[in-house]
Length: 55
Image (cartoon, rainbow, N blue to C red; front, top):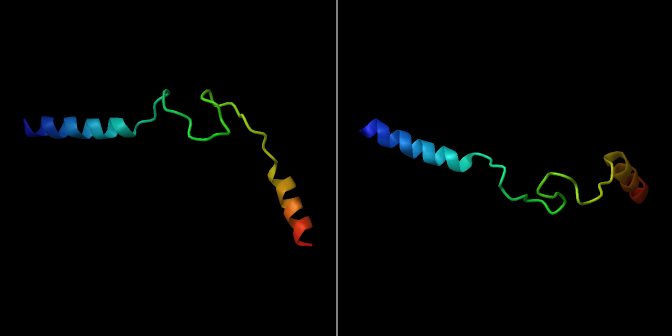
């Protein structure tokens, strides 16, 4: 009986950590289906702006 209770507790704990398709998107830049909502600037362009600003 004790192993069964431990198994049920572990199963419920691990089930809470599993990613689900119905989980809400946590970023404002992505829609629920995973497509981008924001426009992203490529890193080389950001680096070039930083170098130009520091010069």
